Image 1 (cartoon, rainbow, N blue to C red):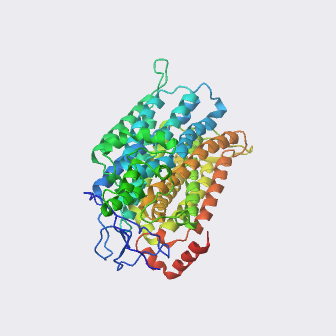
Image 2: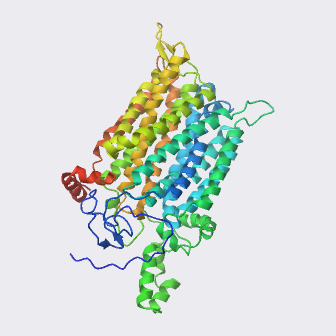
Image 3: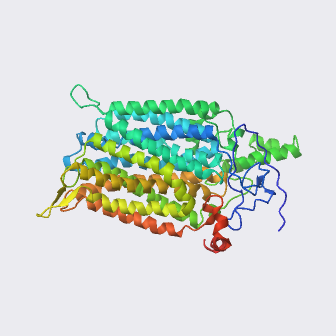
Length: 580
């Protein structure tokens, strides 16, 4: 079938280098990178997957270091602030008048779940919004409102206040998905592994600085000091304000279509109006659909002054169509329309489902560990907030060392899919081993802490090492797999928003269920603490099994598809044709 020559897209030049990672139309054989010799372009995008590329060599593209540094500051600031809460949250919850002695684990889980549940409700919206008005205004708004929520959290003195503030913090914070989207837009397949590899390093740094801020800056509670948890929250808010200023000055917009929109200040001032109109299925007047913009531009070039164009601009006879096209849609119309089956194929569905389990396991572990460490024996290990903070900082150091020194080589030899499975499998081991940290079995059938904290810290350090390696390996691989599963950048923000929405669903259920199961386990003898860890180890094992169904060669970095051969491509084509 002959393909009509499309009209080239009309875009403004940008001083910032952007890379089009994926060809717009999904190739017949998903996962096989187009031949570098293919010089023709489809719908304005080169078939080799890079925009404005005239060279056919496979040389690695240069990383946009300035923008990567700004994104690193954004991620580090946010991770520092968010990780500062966990060391003192069990102690904070135990001081609330509504919380009884045996209910700390349950209510810690409820507080943490309120944040993730709110993110579940809004993460997809923030991803969709970033596809419409740009990445930068969404990041700036989320950072500013998150800083305000941290100040408010420092003044919380009751359970309901803590829950409400954490829920508000989750509602306004969707930056993690947007940062991942920007990384995908400013890199291509030849260099994206390097960029995404260093993202967990930033998370590891936040895993060091955050617990140190939260564990060491908590002041002693007394009648004269009614807000002992205010200092770490003020520091977290200050870090976010500095992050906001840096992003305002140095962060460049990565969404190409945002160049057609008004200046950043106008978009930010219209953001609340967009939120209101989003709820009523409408859109600000300046934000037309992209398909409408291109049709309007082509009509003007062919028939200047045509009455039909005037009617369309005035919203006359096409008012119903314009209203319908302006509604928020999951997959916006571009030069080449994408069906839901092309975006949500078998690999993507399995990937998103297993990513949900991965984040569910990760947040459940992160929620269980402080509760388990702080609780009294024999169920817990009676560690102080300072000791918990230091142990989490140790995990952060492991993250950085492993990410910089080991993971890149490991991923280069094993590929994204296998390292993703390793991450899920590591969680299974970490869950099953944690209840036995510093544990001895006494003659009367009860359990307790083994003598000497040196042995406890040795065991704890080893298991935290396993868990940290699993988290780093799984998260980095998942981010790369999700980015490479997008047919093109037009749906990358939405797909990342969907991934973060599912992630938030897991992170909403995890703390609540883990806290409830741990509270239930305090009434079980012996080894009541193993109840929660065992349940979540089983869930992680399900995700581990699901990861074996992800087989698309297009999910790997550049160079991997050629090594896998054509047989896998034929399987993928078959799955894409009849598997839905």
